[in-house]
Amino acid sequence: AGAAMATTIAEWIAALVFLYLLRRGVAVEGNRPLRVRFGTSAWDMSSAGPLLWASGATFGRTVVLQGILTATTSLAAFGGGAVASAAHEIARQLWSFCAFVADSLAAAAQALVAKAIGQGNLTEARRVASVIAVYSLVLGCGLSVSLAALVWLNIIPACLVKDAVTASVVEPLLAIVILAQPLNSFVFAADGIIQGLQDYNFQFVGMLFACVLAGAVLLATSRLRGGVPQILDIWLTMLTLSAGRGLAALCRYTLDPRSPLRKKK
Image (cartoon, rainbow, N blue to C red; front, side, top):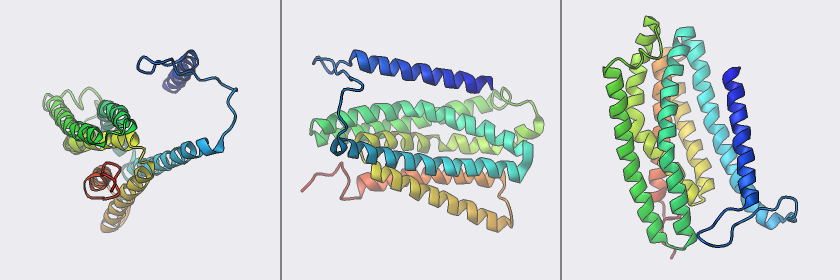
């Protein structure tokens, strides 16, 4: 309850500060500050339509992603009980921590790609996307090495769990988390590129493809085992989810002739 209350208070403070900064004005490269005047603008459906469409696609993508993540957590609890749930949560928190680190590249990609596209400089947008993709792989390798060193020194999972049974269950999951970091970093950087290009429809479709692929793997392992999948099967599903997202983004921006990064003929 305390953690939930702290999170809620922090989010409300951030929202109020954001509204205050918008009201005061945001400097735009030396031009007059951009100010938002609440309650003085007329509702214009023609301008709100693209915003609603983008918000709907982003909302759909989030629902699909959270649906598969919730399913994996539920299956971990049903299939292995308290020990599997604890091991799953430890691995998931490490996975999420590394995701937040990689998300810094996504924020940079979103801003820089959007700036290049806004200036009509498609060449610069492609260059930024390529550089961010390379940086993401380097960052992912760094995260993998760091996590591997912490596991080798027995800092992880020793600092997270004292129960020997749970520690033995989480060890193979840590191997998946470590090996997945270059892929995960690339996926998060690709998300930033997608948002910078305002390619929201593809973001939803790509996530839907990845979740269907992960769900198929989860269903296949369940049938092979004749029941609820084991914890390792669930984490192979998580890895498949990231692989599906990465594959979709790679195909979109390297093979698809309709890609926003392609020159319009």
